Image (cartoon, rainbow over all chains, first blue to last red; front, side):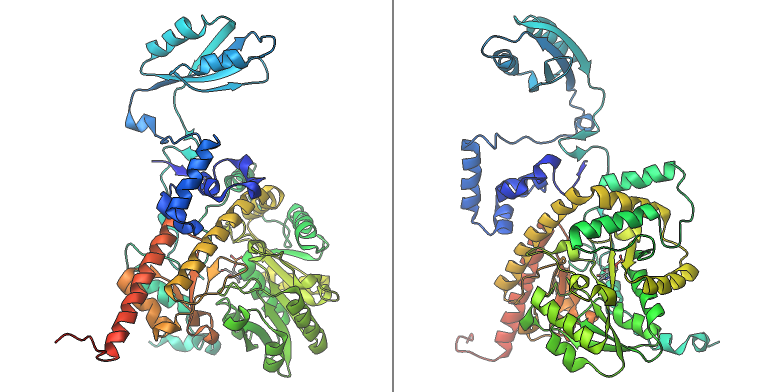
Length: 179
Length: 403
Ligand SMILES: Cc1ncc(COP(=O)(O)O)c(C=O)c1O
């Protein structure tokens, strides 16, 4: 079971939050409200909330939905790793073509261009250590333009997408009536 | 043996808080959605908690200066300069206290002679009246009204005023009504205070939780800083109720007088809380703004729901309390609150817990999650509809009675 810092997920978003769509704000607060509940809170019809969500998807601001799981507890046997990748930039496209090519592998969960000692930081997952290792050695490092990889396996997760893992909610310690 | 006779007379006569009565009913029930809580549902932002942990690790476990850590007093001054347009000398015009609660207590003890009259607007925070009684002062409540959105008016002040009035306690935004005053209203109050030579005790604990238009402290108005003791704390805006930390600012002579009482009764506020408070003032703005934004959305929702349900409710400009009028149900606020609790397990505090002028109203704190607020709205609606159906039946046969 996880608990979340309830005043919003992405700290950086708060600053210019005045510009943000109220539906997005509610989503980022992470209360897990249904569209019907969001409609009630925002005084909109449920159809309007759905329309706005569709619009956000169309604008590719809202890309999709993912559950945030406590994988260690579920014991699903997923192995995850972070890989530092150095690649050769190309005239015209820079890092983009290679980054996109790497991103398209199913094993890749996220991929970022980084400043510093390497170029791409790639988050991958697989059903076993061998499978992840095989992905790195057979697919990733053999891509033309990949110069080197450094793979770090994740041992344990403490926080996922704003949710603390293994910290029980202590909400009931609040008194029910106070001045 | 009858030990009651050992109790001081003015304490025997002190009424129990209406909130405590209500709390005892609620405490025995399960699955209650409580809108009866006067504190944030958020835990203190982690960076503040972490700063306190760090302070403990560094051995910050000693008494501090009676006035409080000088770093904290400097941070308070910077914060007030930036956000309140107020400036106080950290060396002798700021006193760190154990919450606004202690600040109020020592202010009354330092300022009130037996028989001095103290004015305060009502409905109000539960501790004003008893604190005045405890210092043998005379409590002079000034009513505020729903028609003014519970703003205090100079007219109401003038009609409640009596010879011997020395202090005026202000609490804007107000617990339990969420009422605030416009600048013009404040100016009229300030003129009245100058005219009647009143000293103002301004409890501005909800000031950061002002949603529309900025908060104006009465201390900023011309000529008022010298006759205002400004009280503030960390409990509400920074979600730090359990830390017990606040402060009083004012003319050095008055702070020195309060400091004498503080020195002999409290010594100093907890150093750990003082360290947390420094962090809150220096780096707490982002988290505080994020919390305020959520309170505002919750307020808009719950106030709209109350009005839809038929319980007239003004939009509180500040605080995290809505104050709906439940008198349309034909019940007293107490019966309504107890009935709602028993029938639907939703707790709201009867308005009379905050003084006589709260009759007909209940306080609903919206510092709780949307799912709870939505469910509370549904339950209150069901209860109000049931009451309406009952009273329609009680009004006798209306044509379509069976048979
Ligand atoms: C108006 C008002 N003043 C003071 C207090 C007490 O604040 P503190 O926690 O700083 O003692 C409260 C708490 O509910 C309040 O509502």
